[in-house]
Each structure stands twice: as structure tokens, then as C-alpha cells.
Length: 405
Image (cartoon, rainbow, N blue to C red; front, side, top):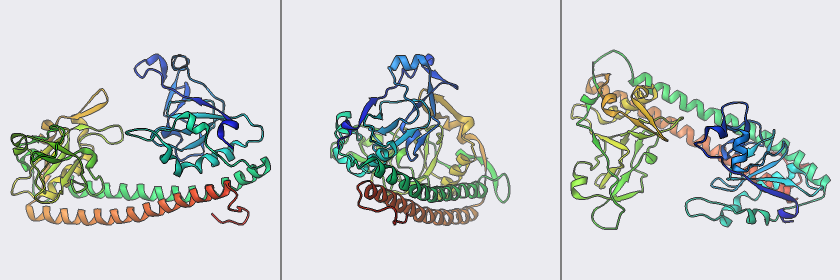
């Protein structure tokens, strides 16, 4: 049956972001975003809360616990049930069964089963969006109520097992990342030992800012442009996978052309979980004409400095929190006072020790990357198994009384 014959759909919204009267710090009405509902069956907490004034300003519906939510913008096809009364944003539709023979849990699984085919029906130039009309007209399986309850009960148990396994793998990934960062900091951000303390800027030629240039036109002035989005935070490199091109004049490129081994320092951007100031080595193909965006500084190691060690040193100092004192927060963006940051002193060993440390850290990074790739593959297989299990169960193609998760 089509969803519109089974349930009522309710749109969400967002109160004025800059109006403090609309938002509560604590004790307000939960306001659900996609990040609050993805990869979970029930929403009991939200990152943000609204006030009654916010509800009125955006004409929000505060729905009771048990209401089904379905994401329709960008990250489409997530479905979760409210564990408490809440409102939601415009990227989500609220779904309330109107047919007495519809089990909300079964309806959630039926909607999750549509997820793989939804992108082909989505609309949008920069992201996938589903219209409310399209969602209303989704064709969903609708067996008798007893069958719906039986299938939902079985899927609750089977998916719980798969979800527990996925959480275990996710914890393993977090542990690998934590150990890798800890080793990086211990190996490079150390107070003493062989070598001497010098201002970090003495390891590099004078800092140069990148440039965004103009839109590419396919002509000889087009160059590869490495952005912060191209920074690989696992390998601490950037460039090999960059695909953005911009157009720079010969004068602009002369002081900004990249060489393998250059250190790229993020000086604008960042956020709560990824503060500004990350650093990587440029590893683009030799001979490629490339530069960086205006949010990135180019640091070229001096001849007596091992290039990879220089990048790893800045990455270690970042993970040790040494950028925090030199970060300024403006509306929606963080800026690094790179001059002050690079003026701080660091312990630097002789060149031979730099090379040994860089090789050892890179060996660790390679091993961690391989571990992560294998674990992510397991997570992908679990997700695939979960979707197949749901899709075949709700259509009746799989008898869950004999199936194993």
C-alpha cells in the first residue's frame, strides 16, 4: 500500500538560529536533527532544544513518544521512533499511523527497506532530497497486523545482535585512532632529549598563503587546488586524491606552487570536533602543477630539516592541543594565528634522528590504516547484512523463524 493510505506526514522546521528566545540550554523541548536519529531505533536525547517561543516561531509540531521520524534531506532514508515528545527540523518528516492495522515498528522497518532505492528518486543539485509527495506515495508491504508484529519482533532481536557487533567494531576503530594519536604525540612532541629547542618557524622557509584564484576554464593557467577537505587525517597527507581545479595567474602561482614534501597547515576552518590547525604533507604526483586554497598555509621545510618529520611534528603538536592558545573563533569559523603558533619553540633532534622517527611513525600509520580498512570492511558487511535482512523480512521473502542474523 502507499504510505499516504497508512499514515499522516508532518513537516518539521527550524526556529530563527540567532534568536536566543527560541533556543533552550537545558529543560527545553527536544528538537531532532538527522544526527540525533541516524543509526538508532529510538530518539531519547537531542543535541539542541527549543523553547515554546521557538515552537511558535517555526510553527513546529511537538509530537508524542511513539511518533516515527523519516529523514528526507541529504542523508535520506533514516527512520527512528521518538522515545519522548519532541519537535524536528525540516530535513525530517514525522509519520503517524492512521490505519489501525499498522504497527509502527513494522512501518519503520518497511521504510528502512526502501533506503537503497531512494537516491534514484531524490531531487537536488548538491544533495539528495525527497519531496513529501514522493514519500507519501512510497509503496510499502502491509501484511496483516499479526504478521507485522511477528516480523517486527524478530527484526528487533536480529538487528540488536548486528548492532551490538557493529558497536564493537566502532569501538575498535576509536581505540586504533586513539593509540595512533598517542604514539604520534609521544614520538614527536617531547620536551627534551637529543637535539635542541628552536622556534618551529625556523624549520621552514617563510610562510606563504594559498590562493583560491578564479574558476577554471580549461586553459594553461588551470592548476590542482588542495583544500582542507583533501587532508587525510589517517595518513597525514594530502594531494594524491585532490580533484579540485582553480585558475591562477603565473604571478599568483610562482610563490604558491607546491612541491612533494611541503607541509600544508590549515589556518581557517575547523569546528568543535576538529579544531583548526591540522597539518599534513603534500604528496601530489611529481610534476603536477598544484597549489592550496586560501584557507591553507604552505610551509616549505629548510634543507637541513627532514620534510616528513616537519609535517609529523606539526600534526603531533595539533593532537597535543598546542593550537588552542592561538585559535580565534569568529562566527561559524576558526582562525589560527599561524605567526604566533609557529613562533612557539619545539624540541627538534638532528636530521638522522628526524628520519628515523618519521619512518617509525609512518610504519605505525600504515599498520593503523590497514587495520582500519579491514575493520571498516567488516562494518560495511554488517550494514549490508542488516539491510538485506530487513528488506527480505518485511516483504515475506525470508522466514525469520528459521533465519540466523
